[in-house]
Image (cartoon, rainbow over all chains, first blue to last red; front, side, top):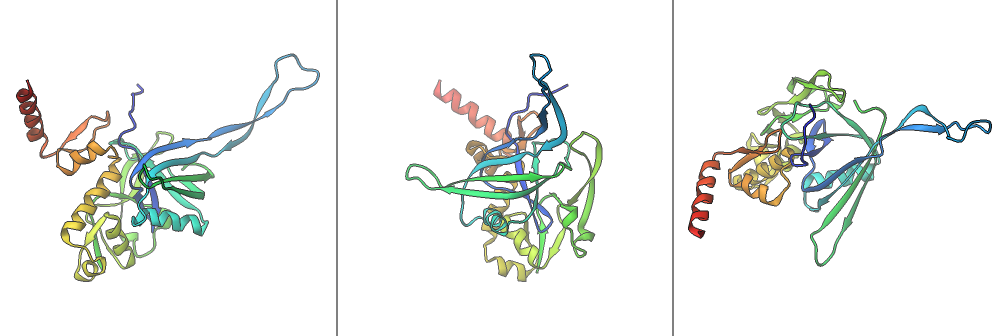
Length: 135
Length: 138
């Protein structure tokens, strides 16, 4: 039976030197955009309702979120280093006290924006495009 | 340079070097489809050596296990302990400010699967203090 699952206890882990390391001070996480691709198959001799079909491909998810940014934090610095290296890196999302999950996202196209405002803390927002299958 | 892992950590088996292979343990889990699979981890207490040891200490995942590492990290034992607790909260997804205060104070250890609190060693003491405070306010 499905359970109502609050957000508390969710963590984003980034692979650093083969160890999945928790991304600190996260305030929100979103995993969006995963979608089976479709194509319009409507023909001129068809009826009024338009038709679609699956192409067999799937658009990958993008992981994004916000955090309180600490320029001295080792993991924040490691993420920015990975952004600038423009490589591929594995990520995991974990939830509170659930069965250990093997769900791994292969991330690329990493981005990290920082914002500074007198009335707010230092904030960062990250994006991680993903490629290939979730394994 | 040696460091000892404070807690179980997931391992990316595709990135494990030959030197780290001996540290990998496998635990039962599930994949994204809900099927049972074995999942690679580095278990609590695993000893890492070399540059990765220093990196794990800086994130709070591990503590120095020899003098060389302790000297390289350049932190007091109090700072290392604070970093360990910070990391543990991040890994458990304890992000709410109030919950982080409770975690640091030993009142909670994290969340159960239904997101209720996992009581810590100071849980009963905290509950008693709350009741006393409520009674005093009445």
